[in-house]
Amino acid sequence: MAYEFYDATIANIIDENDVVKRFFIKVPDERPFSFKAGQFIMVDLPIDSKYTNRSYSIASAPSADNMFELCIVLNPKGMGTPYMWENYKVGTTVKLSRVLGKFTLPEVIDRDICFICTGTGIAPLRAMLHDIYNKGAEHKNIYMVFGNRWTKDVIYRKEMEDMQAKHPEFSFIPVLSRDNADWDGRKGYVHAIYEEIFADKRPAYFFICGWADMLKEARQRLEAMGYDKKSIKFESYD
Image (cartoon, rainbow, N blue to C red):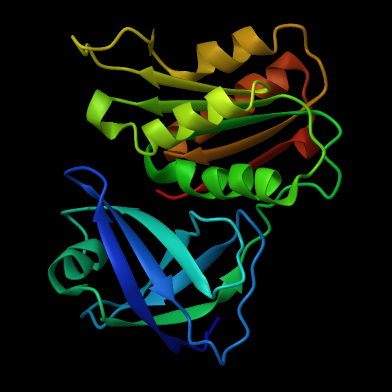
């Protein structure tokens, strides 16, 4: 499918850790711009590749200022992110597609929500979480089960901990799979965490985003627990 691309501008860049950057992008004010939390956008890059487009979930909640955030991890073996790391600066023009995707919240949140993610897969789920609170949407319990290897990989950690302190119905549960000497939180993989939380099989919505192997296993495990496919939404970024 051919996409039309338009120009936007990088307004800010934050180095979240040694391999993750947060790009804040401003769409021209004269251009109507709206999206639903969980959707993604395509970036067109001037690289020598058969495919020059890269898809990235929007990491921020919808707002009225034509600004949004992308949270991107460097893939040193690829062509897209090395180009960004070398060339993207504040003020750089980027080419964007229209907003795409159906990985979005239900209109009515009548069950608990469990966000399951790894790495920068937290991006669209963070957008959903902020959207719920920004709108004051009615909701039940919300769980963010966030798997990574190392302590440094837990992006948005302070933000999530602050949200948990402010909203008692929100639980942020980071889990690390490597032996981190400075870590006293949960260890292992995400699967044991959500299986433990939902051992009672109560109604819930599951939103999964991250590494393809994790995503596949989570879907299989949730279905084995008795949750139907309509309760499980997923987005892969591998």
